Image (cartoon, rainbow, N blue to C red):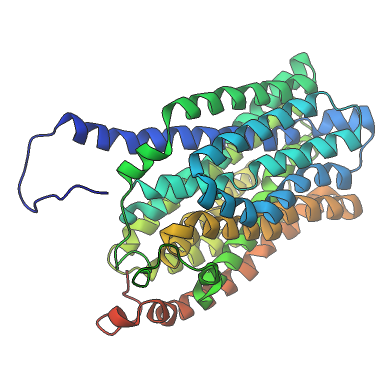
Length: 444
């Protein structure tokens, strides 16, 4: 329930209104923090690749599988577990998921071999499966729809920042204390944050601060309908193309997350801990790009909402140009510069595609909608990127394999262009009553 506000009348801020302004940012901060923990637990593995390769004699394909099994499990379970989150309670689901992936990360520290580590990594995927979708639904529910691309980009950037911390800290801990302590530290951090989330946020507070969708920012429900039908997750061509285009672009991000530490280790002959630190800087650039690209998208979308598709297309094209040129060059300063620019745009499509999915689905099933997006992001993107690159590296060498990675952006650009073309008719299909008063392409 929301309180009525008189338009154009300034009133003194009450304690309740101050709480109302602060609480959404508390929700964002803690939900963002848990996504940091999520990716710290997921990506710390990349920092210890050299240690596992030396100690257990693993191939690049096996190392890639240890990364991709998490993303693949997340992709397969994202939709059903997101649906559980929508029905069972989002806060409760978030806490349970965080505990599961944190305990599984502690299990990685106890692994006796490849099989044990693979099983523990699978359990990390089970815990993380619906977190991004449920967490993002919680965040967007307490903020204005005009901030969707910015908030989506900023929230999902926690994945990059968490990867930075996981790779950088993991490399240092592994070098100083052994690779097992790298996993242990990440697991303990996640358990602490889960406890803090449990005592700070609950469903009652979220309901009190929820900002409802209106006709301009999301599909409306029929009279008497309490929850949108699950078929609306795929009811328009535009939302399907947003899933596919956004997911395929993240093939590149998945490869970068998993293989940049090893790339700098091999191509630049850096020690594993030094290579992890350098890779962490590039992953940080990916996260910064997600935030900035989300802000740009919201600014463009204020006057012409279809421009959100255009920004996504531009970001994917820039990724192809700069990463393609960078990986084609010999190692050195110019290559590092091109790779940095390419990394900045590599995940820039995350904010635009997340905003489009939110626009084309109803809030009552939004966690499930983001779970569907997570499925494509992981199956087409993060899981496929790390595994396929590992397979290519075994056959061609890692330096050659990375030259093929940016080509995934070609498919992403094609899908996003098709989505842009389908967007006006998709909006008309959702809201026939309002579409007649709006020009094609200018629908909010």
